[in-house]
Length: 505
Image (cartoon, rainbow, N blue to C red; front, side, top):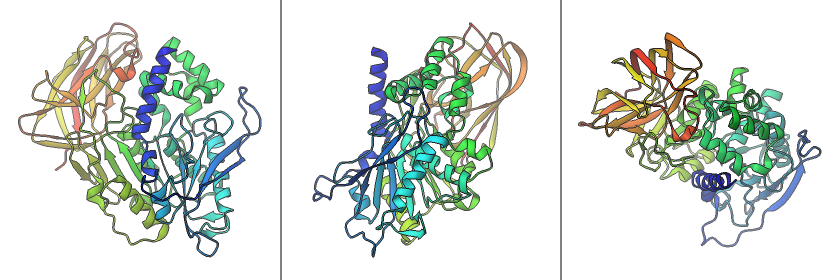
């Protein structure tokens, strides 16, 4: 229990650092604001045996000065990160209120004052809850509307507070063929929970344990049982795969749905829970071409970034790209994006439809594509020793930005062999460090001899100067996947190896 408590404290600090909540608070010098109206509405009844029955979803409604039936304003929904609760203190969200937006902050089910258990953005639960919140917003006489029961509506929030935005918008789209949201601004959130929590069914143990501890009282019986099974077996249980399968944009995309509204995606490249590839998938797959042309993807160094040292990595913290796009910082960029899309403000932001990625060294690279475009042949090698195996790819100067991959014939000499792959930078294999601290696992379930594999590598952005080189690092262990390395002693042989890299030209 001490481990759970410690990890809960660490994840709480990480989520607080990653979350946009602090930017929503009033400046200490701001005059006292009118207290919000606290309301609880009926949510979807709970079916979990731990807490069956009716559920109330509680919210705080912030009305800006001057808003009325004769002067209606757009509204922004807001919600908290995992394990948190809504923002309800007077004077909160002052910058949005001063800009002429109403704000409604929500306790999602299982958290704060809301009842029920957390189904982790399941369309049938949290998705339906969000629809009922939108219905309540539409009933307020000071809210601007484009039609009956159709408020002018945006959304803000990070992590779990980004997940509810997609849950609400896609659930409406699935039910009615359209969504009443007019713009979204999700930060550090996911495309697929299964791919995030257990890529290649290799569990991000450190994060899973921290998240389980942080939401202990909110879990359903399925999550309690699945967590226990995972600890015993070391595998991602089928029950968890099923529980999370529908809980994100990936399931809607698979069903042929796309959002046709502008979205501002803000994602951490050094985020080791919901890494950059999750935002890229949302940008590329979850939006229509028209929506993507009106949207922005902004990557920064931060997010869910628990300390990790094995293998060692690097990233200069910060958010270098907003200044290129028309915002002095991200808060300014977000407010401008919402004003342009909800209030009809002049369109001064630039960079729509492109990927704007902060490099590991602190710069910013803007590209039209994140697909790999340059192939490098590497020598055959064997991995499976205690230390990481590091192979040179190319010498600097070189800039990479996007989603690399590796192709090879893989021979696995063990049962359930696992290795962790990444790009790294250094002057030699001895000092090479993993770009933006992220690795992705590759798993071979059984013995095989020379099977051709394509292995996804973490999405990155880096500028490699002259005198340094780009390397491939393959490690038998990773502290983000603690205790989830290979299940038996093994060796993994890679032959006919090529790495495809997104080189910026």
